[in-house]
Amino acid sequence: MTSARAEARPRAGASGALWPAIGVAAIWIFLAVFLVYPLARIFYDAFTDDAGRLTIRHFLDFAADGFYRRSLWNSLLLGLGTVAATSVLGFAIAFLLVRYDFAGRTLFSNLTLIPIISPPLVGVLGFTFILGRAGTVNVLLMDWFDLLTPINFVYGVHGVLLVETLHLFPMITLNVVDALAKIDPALEEAAESVGACGWWKLATITLPLTTPGYVAGALLVFIWTFSDFATPLVLGVHDLLASQAYLNIVQFVDRRLFRMGIVISAFMVLLAVLFLVAARRYVAIKDYSSLSYSRVARRRLSPARQALAVLFLSLVMLASFIPYAGVLLASVGRGWSMTPIPVQYTLQFFERVIVETPKYIVNSFLYSTLAVLICIVVGVPIAWLLARTRVPGRDVLDGLNTLILAVPGTAIGIAYVRAFHEAPPGFERGLTSFWIILPLVLAIRRLPYTVRGSYASLLLVHRSMEEAAASVGAGRLRSFRDVTLPLMWRGILVGSLFSFMTSLQEASAVLFLSLGGWETMTVGIFSFYIAGSASEAAALGVILLAVAAVTVLAINRVAGTRMGGMFG
Image 1 (cartoon, rainbow, N blue to C red):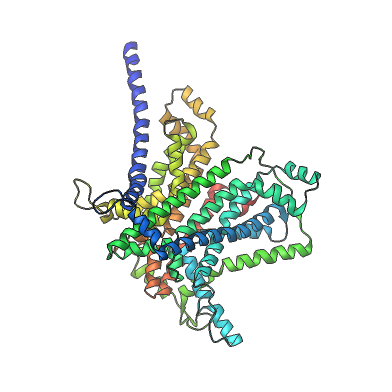
Image 2 (tube, helix red, strand yellow):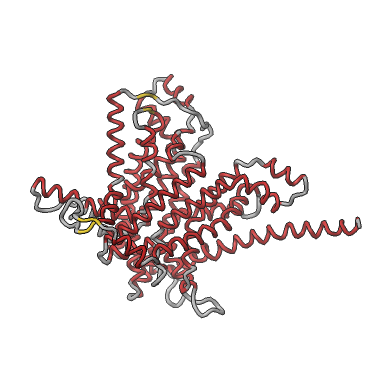
């Protein structure tokens, strides 16, 4: 009997080690097939000719084309301009909310985060309804001041800059708020003791210490702006790299243009990775070891300065909320032409998108739900590997997870078209012929959010709890199931909810992959607007906004904090 038990232990131990190894291998296979291979495919297409020979001729053609050079220059300028504009707004708002106390601070803490949850495509539509040539503002100006020509508020690069800035500045605010909370007050007190006060102390001590958080936010802002093609196209801007990549790929007529779309996509990925590496290296050469979480007492502003702070924040919020007003009015308004607001109101546009064409909503929820399930199955084990193990390739796994955030959605969509259009051996059709391609690309795009939420929760679970389970005979899988998982479920749920919300809003990648009957809400918004059915597009936009709002409330409820709680 004793001998039988002794023989069983090695077999049980081997079985216990086999399943984790299979799980790790499955994760690597998933990432290799649905992330590494598609990206490798667009680079292969970009650096080879029709015969498969290596060449750089396509990039030379790109460099020789004046229009593409101008598009590259415009994209860089737009990205840097958006970073500069969002930095000014983000820093000012973060500094006010963290360091000062004034009337309405809690309200503004909550409102400041709302612009980032709105789908970008919905935001740009809202701006056109209010600030467009026949929008509310121009109609009022023409009525009041007898203007004969409407003012161009949004159509052009300046409009793209405005829309992107008002949508993305919370990315800077959130990261700077977190960084400001880590600054040891003793550092600023030491600067004051040697005469550094006011702007000098801010420029030499406070702002440099926010670099890690600020660089992370600025990088996301730049990549988001650099890769967004829907906003420029709606506002009539075509001479940008992302816009050209989209237009060249979807035309499917001229092979040279199609190839150039692939080259532009590869170039965008290279630039994004270059910016990511440069940002991480810049942060790495700095020393932030003096940072610590310390609560800084807020200073009460004088009545006059309180009025200025409230006025500044109110103007920013008013500008940021323009899209919501425009989309809501357009979704229920009829006869809105050359009038400040609609002359009649109806719910027929909601009926049209919910009852007559429900595929947009059904598809979006189906694909996003499946994408979240994939994110949980793949992302939670990745978080556990990063937080609890030293397995070979751990750093590469972490790098791939970070790379997903840097790769533009436009490039991912084009990469999937190239990688999965042809039928693999043994199959009659490629993966792009099946609707499952959409949940897969959404899962890859949103995987980092689930990984980050799970990883953050794992750091709060002390290893001694897992060690205690192991001491009474629980294996790794059982210890994870019975001890770790119940303690980290909040982080998993928060990451999954955020993945779900952002999957519903994804436009860049799915626009390349949606065929007839597969369309999501973002594809529907784009299609309706291009076809001239702006009210139906607005109705879908309102539904997306409502789902985003409910999801954010659920995230805050699960996380046990209010929206403004992160501001201290």
